[in-house]
Image 1 (cartoon, rainbow, N blue to C red):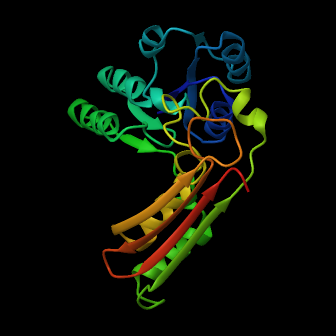
Image 2: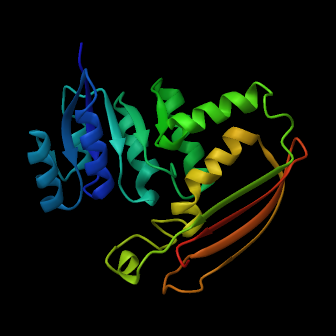
Length: 235
């Protein structure tokens, strides 16, 4: 029996989610919802599905088994909670929200509703990363002593100025680390375990935004290894 997924958000990442969903056997796109009616209409035409600008109307649409949320980060929890309360499984873009309290609330609401909650951390399924995980867990690489990671990217000024939410505390929740570096942070923790101690500095060195465009951190893992990470949209 086919499963039906609804797409939340009208931005570029929602188009990526839509195209990916279309390539999965047994998965059908149920509907698309977002604030920008024109963008949502275009996505609906691509999928051949109904479109909504009202979230509650969208969540009442059936058949629908789950939602993929690609809206601004600061709206993830509220939208995910609304979906969970309708009995829908939730697959949400990273981060699951911009504060720990809201993230925890989303987790708890999904648990209470008995629905699955997942996050788009697609790097975990990259074949080379999967192999690396197997090597580490199997002990083939020995004991990890030193970890180094970097995300030295550049984003032009209009990446922020043309967006109503990027680079803001309210909807982005952070900058180069929260948005661009978060996949690498996830891989560090998944591959190497929990971090016990951390020292970090952030700065806004290039862009006119509320949040950081440059971040560095040094940390000690619970297992004793040392590590560093750099993340930037200023590089």
